[in-house]
Image (cartoon, rainbow, N blue to C red; front, side, top):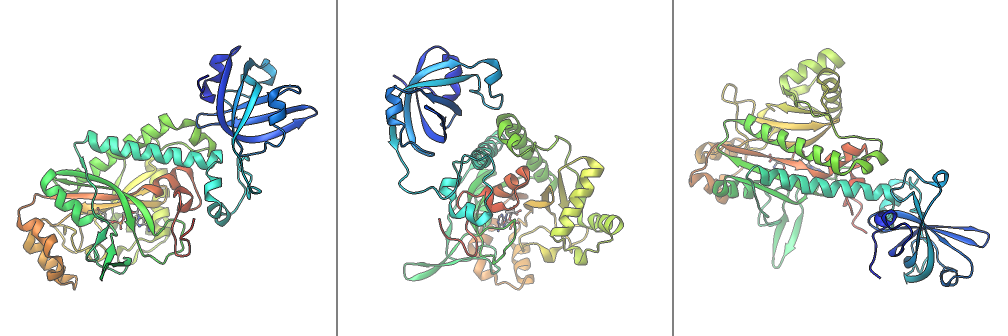
Length: 439
Ligand code: AMO
């Protein structure tokens, strides 16, 4: 008999089916045994009657056994239906039950509960098992839809997908947040962004995107940093200015949220969350932001350096004033942005750069880049760096490059804020932080 996905069992009422899945939970009622069995499509209740073949083989079956069952799909009386389950209208009367795989240890956590009720460390220590929990799985179903939608939005905009090297001969953007590794008989560095390579690829393909691993040696213990994350990057040429880039990112975010809203309704409902309303994303300059924070919250932005609290405040203000969960903050001071950022033509102490904030947290950084070799060389010097160390990078512009720019978007932060997760680590399958390298 062919396997029937559990979610389709109601279509087979009155027929025999074969299902495979994990035992979620076992309940014994006198001589009757009930099993909730789940597969990747859903969950259904099984009843095992005394005297059947299944009654013999079910004797030692417990939670998380992998099983195969043949049985009769029976309609349940109206009053006994479970409206929360797609399969709540049926029950399967098992005839045979075969154990395909079984736990050989006491399970450290009970994954059949809707809420696991364990702290973050326990959750991550038992990650592989925790992933079987319905709410934990929902995070990664949404994550999967996010990756697919980003890809779709980018291709739809004429962007070519690229993969850039993650083992580098020098630290990409300077700074101290890179990991040094042994590379045969010399040192190498793990890429802390695809920045230079995506600009190089832009100079040939005009529009490129990458979904890739980013390594950051940041010794932070925060709810929004991990040391390895997945960046959603883009770079585009022939722009009119940074507005072209923001418009493209806005289109992309709307596409992502629309898709997640449609494809992941059940997963969002488990968290009582929904995707942001589709309204225009406001653009507010850092100097306007400083005025707003001073007037509304009595907070001063020293040197326009906005901290996590300021980001939360401006998001709260934008939500109540414009009804938007997202906001672009623009024109960051030159000294707070990387050396490749394009200075604003009316005031070179500011740059044509932006951050995109979502529900209180920065999810993307981007901007227009310097595309002239001479200006870039001067800027590198101005930042106290040696142009000799950036020869390959400056070459991109020696060969002729158009006005361009792009963004780096943190995938895990999007999911964290979308579901209201306490820590970004809940949105990473196997997170890496200062202390954690396993599992
Ligand atoms: P930036 O360093 O701001 O910009 O990174 C871009 C986005 O990546 C995410 N992010 C992180 N997520 C999790 N853990 C971390 N430690 C972490 N650090 C950053 C954030 C952030 O907004 N090259 C530029 C981008 C560009 O201009 O194209 C860059 O890397 O969501």
